[in-house]
Length: 480
Image (cartoon, rainbow, N blue to C red; front, side, top):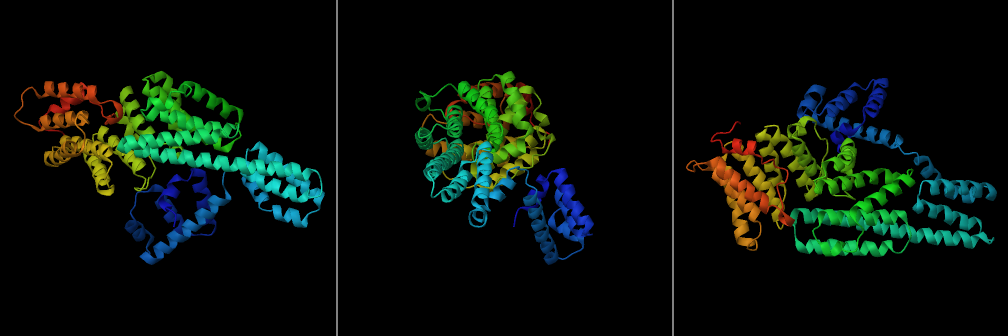
């Protein structure tokens, strides 16, 4: 069954009202009640069963039927003008076998023009296959054969490029949580393979996929050797946006534009050019729920971490939790799952809801197997230890700090993760009741952490460790 609560919560007000109106016409009151409960998202299943006055079996039957009706509604109301065109494509065999040849050719040529306008090379192969058959005894047969072969090969190249982009995105997430140099090399190999595919055809689609990977590599993978011959990031971004403006009817580009808005934001954000990043941030943030769904072609939850950093820079980090983010990531997608929950924990943390932050981070530790992903484990545990310290839960914080410290000592090369060790010393100092001049010493360790916190071991960039926070941290007893 579909994840019904999530689907209902993502429905637009217009779609929700339309579905509810259908139930009103049939006087399906329990469907309306269940639909409303799911949209509001405040009740547990047990509470819904009680309010609906049904038993569990009847409830799950009702829920299943509601899911079917919503799926049917959404399918019939897909907001894509190309759906009718695709339905016509499904009837191509009827055109060949039951329609006069001249009429069939005229209809297929019309489809060809529309498919070209909508830039749908895969679907064009169906049209050219049909036109080949209808022109079997004419010279045009060879023309359509060539067009068919060309679009078959081109479609395969596009599919291969899209697979490589997805593979790169998944591997980039793996690198983000492991900072493993072998993973970095795999990213470079994928980058090279995509470049080879893109050399086969002069295609703006392939060019966009190549720019997506090249820019992402330059922004998130610290391997200068791999980008030595690439164009400057700013030039690649400008070229991509020109393509989007030129082919503004391309449905894929309508979504990929926001992926490149994200990359442009990350580029200027990394350079600390906050005025330049602002408009790209607004573009992505305005469509945030939709953008986060692009995790097959971009490491989309990375934006959430940068979003925290931007709010900190603007001094409005307390506003992060003002609007609930309705987005779910399966725990099997470890990099995005961790980032999403770090974001949720940070929203709670900056709202002063330290208990909520602890709950979120504990759930991450209990859900994710951190074998071979030391970097992400360290970041989660240090953030959790800090949140525990704010609640005076020093015993749990101490256990977490010992765990991280032991792993660094036992398994990590000497000289690595000095930033994490300094952060541990900072929290341990804060827990001690015997140290004098705690605030001054905390500031000194904080400054040392800032100096060490760079390169591929960089972490906890979403923490605001300013003097005001250090003063709060230095207090013997924290507000709960």
